[in-house]
Amino acid sequence: MSQFWIDLCGWLPALIIPIATIIQLSAILRQRSTAGVSALTWFLFGVANIGLYVYTEKYTDIQAIAGLLGSAMLDFVITGLAIGRYGQSSEPLSEQA
Image 1 (cartoon, rainbow, N blue to C red):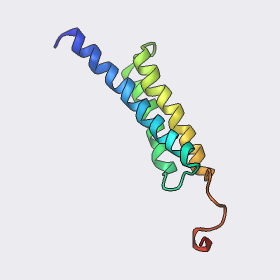
Image 2: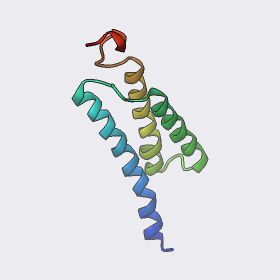
Image 3: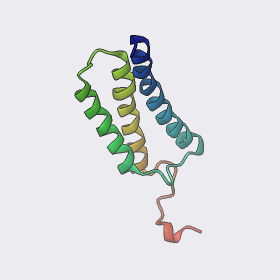
Image 4: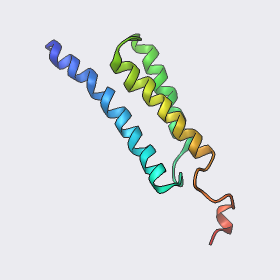
């Protein structure tokens, strides 16, 4: 495979993963609610991104930094918002009308 295609394949996850994460974060902020957002899922995405960053051993590549560490940071922001139940009533669900 040519170096062009290898480089292109390296940029795909570096762009797609953060964009997908930003879409979720934007939806949370736009709706002002984390209803239906799993804190555990986003926490695990963050841990997985850090693990993959370490595994690839490409510590100075912008693709790895933006795609993996940048996404991990956003994953943990989403996790924090979900744990804090951002925008949700503090009443138990059974008492909400």
